[in-house]
Figure 1 (cartoon, one colour):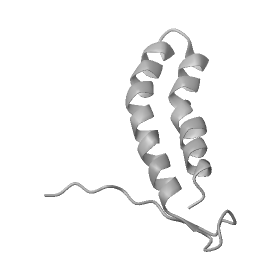
Figure 2: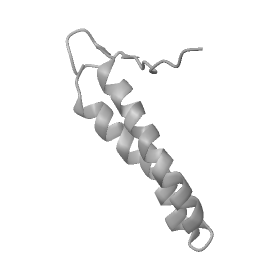
Figure 3: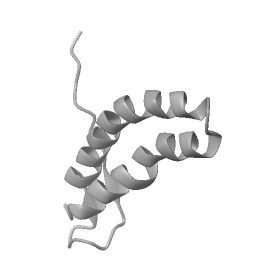
Figure 4: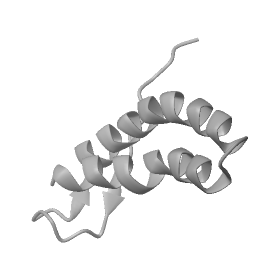
Length: 75
């Protein structure tokens, strides 16, 4: 059984002439997964004591990391 790399495709964008992005969303997903491995357990621990702070920590990969990486690469 082989483990592959997830390929994410986003079509309909206006950031490049072909209007499809493959590299940016794929790297964004990988960065999201790495950040989530670190931040979700920390956020769950913080949530026990400070609910809103824990929620912000757990939301950080989806609201900051993925969009920043995905939008920084136009292809």
